[in-house]
Each structure stands twice: as structure tokens, then as C-alpha cells.
Amino acid sequence: MSLPQWLGKRSRREDSPSSSSDESLEQTSDGAESTSTSSSSSTKRYVKSWERTFRGSTMNLSHSHIEAIQKEAASTSCPSLPAMVRQRMELKKEAIISAMRNIYWIATEEVALLKYESLNELVQIRGCAALKELFVTKNAQYSSHQIAEEMLEAISSCIEESTDLSLQASPFIGVMVDECTDIATVSNPIVYAKTFKDGDVHTNFLKCMQMEEDKAITLEKVLGLSTDGARAMTGLREGLTGYMKRANPYIVPIHCIAYRLSLATSQASKQITCLQRYKRVLVSIYSYFSHSSVRLDRLREIQNVLDSPVLKYKQLYYVRWLSLHIAVSAVQRTLPALISFFDNEASQYEDPAARGLTKQLSTYQFITTTNLLCDVLDIITRLSKIFQGTNIAFSIIQLMVNSAIRALQTLQSSPGPHLASFLEEIGSEEGQVIYKQQTIEVNSTQKASFETVKSSFIDEIIKNLKTRFPQVELMTAIKILDPRNLPKKDDKIDSYGDSELDVLLQYYTNNNTNSEAESVVQHSTVPFDVTT
Image 1 (tube, rainbow, N blue to C red):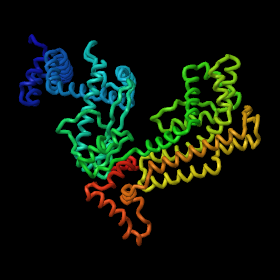
Image 2 (cartoon, rainbow, N blue to C red):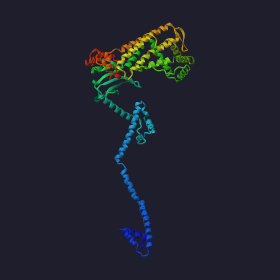
Image 3 (cartoon, rainbow, N blue to C red):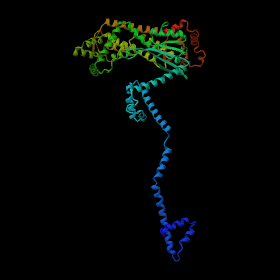
Image 4 (tube, rainbow, N blue to C red):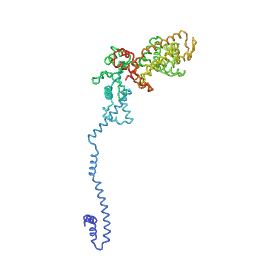
């Protein structure tokens, strides 16, 4: 045979129907039985070895088959073009949302919009990978100031739309109007609105511009109007209050009580010449240190030597209700060090301003006035902070005013804690008196002059408080709407609030044409926080 015997036998073996016929073919030669048996076992081993080699090598060498399988798998796992577009759009959307969150944080925290780009860089360093999708090319990174302004405008539009919906949905509205001056000294009105939803009161800021007709709020829904004391706001004929009252008689106009309290104090001091001079001294002290860090350093050295508190001297602001108290308190607590400093400046540097301040601060009149103002302003400041509280009740307003008046009347007969401490330290002697290592001149004329100033100042404050916080029947009646005023005993609930309810019904059923309406306009004392 030309083919190997084992291959030929393998072919015949595969063609035979059974293994028994193969065995008969293998035993053709007589007397060669043992040789045939040995050859058969060898043939089987070769066949198995060749079969493994043939199949493995064939599969390994079939590159086209492998590529076909890989292409088929890739075609089934690769997303379609629309799916890829949606995935990219989602990534871009997440990047825009992250950037707008940064813009919103910048606006709410009053950070300069120029910090938008650096804030994005910081957020990416901290692990926010979403912002990387903002980068398109070197010239399109969505980090410019113009992009930041556009995003801020979009956020503002969404908030404005939400506010408009709240105003439309609220059954009634309270409005607060005031005037503010920006950094460019341009006067602008500022408007807030209080709305009612699901039992809660919400305060909304409204930008100052004319609303479109589809956003306009009918005046019938406005029940409370809070303004400052300017005639342009509270005037019954040509003021804002007058126009709104004629359009809606049920509006309750309100003058901010914290501002009224500030006016009661400031206008009382205007009637006393001594207190006007005192304020000018406070302004001079602030001006002396405001533009010189060297002077402040020398003052701190003296304060440390004398064990005096290290405090900043504040500027007096007309619009900041507590600025006078803060400024006076700083001078009172550091007065010995302050006198020593100005005395040193006058002698060592021959400073005429320091010499003049030394003389003024070392007088009996200035020291007693400082301590008197601390005692009086302590009372006024406590009352002002109560009025600025969030959840102030109607019922306590007049009670707190009356309590402050009684405390001020007590100062007429006996000195307050600050003034009493000073008078106790200098005693009843006259002439050259040592006060905290400083020499001051005390005589009977100065004492009498101070008593006149004290009596006049306290009388003026009490008078202004009574004028600006009168008993208004309508405002007193509204207290029955506060659940905190309900009687604790059940037997008193049946008759609780009957008289007050009569007042409210009369006001809201007579169209406010009586004189009570004018009284409310002039003397309402409820803060805006509780108008709605």
C-alpha cells in the first residue's frame, strides 16, 4: 500500500458499520495473530494523537473564523447611534447642572461672579468629574464671565416665575416696602411680599420693576402694608398708604416698630445740645483711628499695659439702630486707656487733634454722659432686639414698651449700674478727683448741668415712646388670633375675645371710613413679621 497501514486501516475502520467487521479484517493472515494484536493497539494510539493534532491546529490557524466571531460580538455589544447621543447629552446636562449649582452658591453667598471659573477648577480638583464635560475646545470651555451671567439670569428667571406663582396662589398678601441706597449712592425701593400656603407664611423678595399684566396682583389680596416713616410712604393723601387705602379699605398700614424705636431715641437726643456735641466727639474718635493703623497699634500697646479691653471704635450709622449703643459702649469700656493714649499723642507727637480729644474725654460731663447713655441704651437695645425677633406676639408689644418706660422712669430717681459705679468711685468730693488713674475736675455746676441733661433726655425718650407706641384698639384686638394667648382654664374660653372680636368685625365691615382707619395709619405698631 502507498498509504501507511495504520491510516488505511483507520479509513476502513471508519467506513465499517461495526467494530466486529474491523476485527475480522485485521485477522486475514494465518499464524500472525500475536503480531496483529500488537499492531492494532499501536494503531489506536496513533489515531488518537493525530486526531487531537489535526483539530487543534485547524482551529488555531483559522484567523478568519476568529475575526468573524469577534465582529459578531462587537456588533451586539456596541450601542446604537441614538443611544450614544443620549448618553453624551446626559453627561453634558449633568455638567451644566453642576456649573449652575456653583453659580447659585456664588449668588447666595454674595461672592463676586468673577470667582466662577476658579470655583469650577476647585470643584474639579475635589473630585467632581461632571464639570470636565464643559470643556469642548480651548476656546469653548463655558467658564467665561458672560456664560456665568447667562446662567445667573436663567436661575433668576426660574425663581421669579416660582415667586409669581406663589403670589397668585396665596389667598392674601402682606407687602413691605423700604428704600435702600446702593454702593453708587443710587436710591432704590425694595419690596418684599409675604404669602400664605398650607398654613405657613413665606417671605419673598420682589425685584423693583413694573410687572406685566399677566403677573399683576390685585390689591384686594393685599391686607398688610409695612413701610418706613417717610411721608411719601405713610401719607394719607399723596403717599403710598393713601393710594392703597383708597383702592382697598381693608389694608392695615404698619410702620416698622424697630425703626420707630430708633427714631424715638435719635429724635430725643436732637433736642439736647450736650448730646449733639457728644455725638460729634464719637465721630472724631472714629475718624482719628479709621485711617491710621499706626495709631491703632500704639493704642493697643497702651490698652495691654492698662489691662483694658481691645475694642474697635464704631462709626455712627443713621440706618443701623444699634450703632450708637455699640459706639458708646466701646468708649465706656476703654475710656482710661483712650485718655492716656490721646494725652501721649499730644505730648509726644504734638498732635492738636489728640490734645483737643484729651480735654473733652477728661471732663466730668463727658464721662457721666457716657455712663448715662450706656444705662439708657441698654434698655432701648433690649427692646429693639425683641422687636426684631421672628415670632414676636401681638400681645407683648405694648407690654414691652410699658416695661421699658418704667425702667427709664426708674433712672430718673436712681442712677443705673454704669453711672452708679462711676459716682461711687469718685465719691462726693469736688475739685481734682482721680478716676481710674486719670485726673478730672468736678464741681457743683457740672453736677447740676448733668442732672438737667439726664432729666431732659429721659423725659424726651419716654415722651417719644408714648407718642410712637400708643394704645391702638385694632392692634390690641388682633392678639386674640394668637393661640398663645388662649386662657389656660376651660371656663374662660367661652367669653374669651368677645370684645376684641367686636372691634375686628367693626373694622372689616365698615369699609374703614371712620376715624379709626386714620388712627391705624398713624399709629400702627405691629411689625411686618406678623402682619400675615
